[in-house]
Amino acid sequence: MATTSTSENALQPAGVACPGCGTLVPNIDTENSCYFACAQCYTFFRKKGKTQPEIVKKFYPSEMVVPPIPVGTTGTLDGKQFTVVGFMKKTDTTHENRWHEYLLYNNTLDNYFTLAEYKGHWTLLWVSQLKGIKLYGAGSFHEMRSFSPNRTFRQYTKYSFEIEWASGEFDWDITTDEGPHMEVYEFVDAPDIIVTEEDGDKKVCYQGKFVDRTDVAVGFGVSLSSLPPKFGAGVLEIPKFIEQEKPMNRFTLLLIGIVLLSPFIISMFKPSRLVFNEVYRTTKDTSAWSSINPIVTPPFEVKHSGALNVEFVTNITNNWIELQASLVNDKTGKTYEFTKALEFYQGYEGGESWSEGDFESDVNFSSVPAGTYHINLYPYAETSIPIDINVRVEQNTVLYSNIAWMLAAVLTLPILRSWRKSAYENNIF
Amino acid sequence: MSNFFDGFGKIRYYIIVMSGLVGVYLWASITGTRFSGDDNELKEEPRGRTHAHGNGFYHK
Image (cartoon, rainbow over all chains, first blue to last red; front, side, top):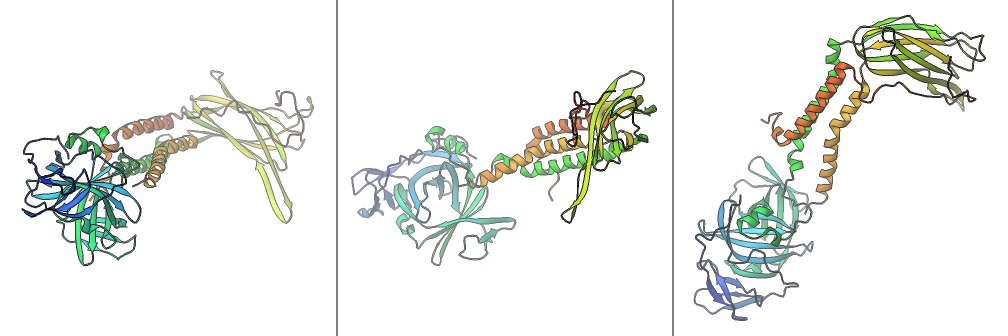
């Protein structure tokens, strides 16, 4: 993890004069660096010991980029102190992607690290000391490789590259890496990465890890705004919502279990009970045109306050009936009014039987106090045929609508996160 | 071996909110309170009805 930038133990750069323009190119690792790139005229040259500089190549950059972390900057990243000794802008010749690489020198370890930046996403890479890397398959884009022992890295990309331009110093001829002879494979298991550079029989393996953009800015003492802005999602970055995915899925399963089991557990203490169950046959009211005598049930006892379900089951066929009803508390006079319309049609047409509608219906009442109740029923139908109406009242009925609401609430965030994850994975660079 | 509760600290605020919601649900289940209210005042009319009848409903 990055801490703060420091100039303690900063290496004092010597300089090597560019054979192209005479500009002094800093030389920090005087013992190992023998290749230099001039940031003024883009000349890449070799200079070893007291020999005369020898121009290797001249870069022709398509655009001038001032590295936000200049060569010579010292800083701390991942608990190590580094000095930026080189900078390269590379182009993936296969996919036309462009990225920047900072060569970091650690004086204590006398070792080089690479800090790569692509579309605002940062990766710290170093030569791998890992043992037991295993290769599975070869050549195809989807092959997988894994290493010691619990990690599996999926191949993310394969490419060759060109160097558009460079500045600073290097301990090898960076131009020999250019071209199709060098195949680079990247294997990802976020937040870590393994990169292999394969040139014929020669293979070099690098290990790397995601570095937060803020840690880079703080570690090298540059402003966050000076670093390239983040674009999309980095392949090595694990967003919080993905870190939270597994515990959230487990917690959601726990909640679903509670919601689904709760009716059974609660029914042990407050079991559902049929408190009224009678069948009535409608009779024509001779005093009124086309109407049916009202039905008044005898009183029945609701022993516990809670949900109450009133159900009507009729024997209508190719007919309809309208039931206006009142559930009346005999003591308080409180009335629960409702109207249900039942219609049921069936027939045989075109060689097939059909039916439509329903001959039964029910209503639920919430938090009905305990007490004595009766039901006033006012049926209405256009037929004079008697209709049987089974009136059933159940107390402590299970409120399935509550279960549905609760399941919807429990599943909302996991579903939204699933969509977000899908969008994130489609936007990974 | 991973524990069922591994990582629950990362979603502690979600756990607090959802636990409260489940608590409300259990209270509603025990008291028989329906989130969507009563079915009373429900007015329905069968499609098979052939003519209008006053305000649409029969009253004794």
